[in-house]
Amino acid sequence: MAENEYPKHILPKVGWRVGITGDDIRKLCKNAVIGRRMDGPIEDYTEQKLGELCLKINSFRLDSIPNLSTSLLGTVFRYEDFRFKQKEKGKDSWDGVSESDALISVQNYEKHAEKMSVIGWEIKELDGLPIPYTRNFPKESIYDEFKKEAESLAENVYIEEYDKLPIDANKSRYKELVGKVILRHMPTNLNYWHFTIDLFPSEDVKCAITNAKSAWKRMMADNVRDILCKNVLIISKDSDYPSIPNWEKLVKNSSIV
Image (cartoon, rainbow, N blue to C red):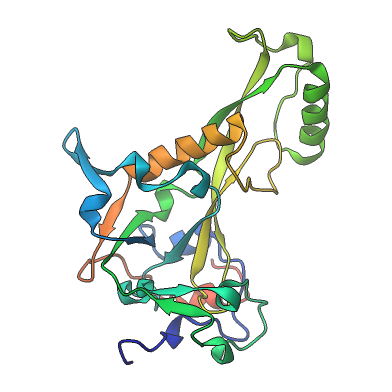
């Protein structure tokens, strides 16, 4: 493959599965890794803390944490493939049935020309990770709305009465909750191996947050950012990241046993 030629080996193929889970991946490779491209040298993003290499906290804007894009390494996706950035129709969600070769054009991707760095995380360190956060309810009407939503959408969330909630220093009632990080397979037209790191609140296990605008969403995003910074892996062209044996099983429309 020529240096500037789009890596066709990462394209989705007709008949391949949409919806690979973290559990599916770990069954084949318990130390499997997802990666993300960063623009510029790795020294711009890292620092030593207590003898450990970490990401600087400002490596990620807080509002970039929900739905953070990554790609799964260890299959056919390689370090060099991070140089290609999907855009326009290239980054649209793959419909699961269409060929994508025709979408390889300068309109739908760009090749990163500057120095890049690649960082990553072991899937086992993120997928299913609990995220503590606190929601404040200055008015009972706000809590009633939360309670109604949680009772219909949540799993195993105890919803007490408003007047039994604790009160903070600002005399506002609050509830401590625990959400979850889920790694979701979100293949795009030009990258089958695209996954997102999604943050699910305990009161709605089917709908991930999409921003960090409110206080409780910022708390979720901040907690996850801290974990990403502390558990980072530096991936280079010569990195010996784990390969996923029999990765072809991931793309089949059947469960992995």
